[in-house]
Amino acid sequence: MNARAETPPLAWPATLTDGPVRLRPIRPRDQRRWRSLREANRAWLEPWDATTPEGSPGGPATFQAYVRNLARQARAGESWPWVIEFGGEFVGQLTVAGISRGAMLSGTIGYWVAQEFAGREIAPTAVALAFDHAVTDGGLHRLEIAIRPENAASLRVAVKLGFRDEGLRVRFLHVAGAWRDHRVFALTKEDVPGGLMRRWRLTRRAAVG
Image (cartoon, rainbow, N blue to C red; front, side, top):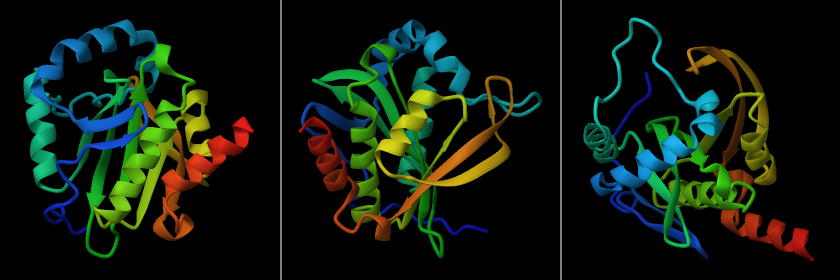
């Protein structure tokens, strides 16, 4: 069994920034923007959205309950739920979930960005910010990203950041109404001794010039 513990005091709540990209805790007053963004991007996001298998308990009935549930998980050190902002505008979400303490010190990163903001390096920057925070202030050792093989946009994020491809997990998560295979990518603290954000900045600089 994976040990769980209270989140370290520096880990949450936390706001992380790099240029126009900012991660901040999700809050109840985000409801209107969250709903409008999700509705406008339904076709873009639904193929990759986690779903509840038939017969399992459903999720929170309202956005307010959803945010309260995320806040409870954050206080318990189980997850860190952020909004992704770009130039001060809410454009997506990123969560470090499934946080394990004890002998594992690990977590899983999940994220989405609205289609109109895709391709602007927002998602990889947000993931790099979250990774560095998780291993420094959060005390984690390893983070992974599980991605459906068909999700080309999300796969590009993992590849750009140099996450290690650890192979296919068969029928790993319930997504879009069925159990789906996922490719799992991971990094440990030792893989990026200078920090993932530093490596990502160098990668962007090399691509430009």
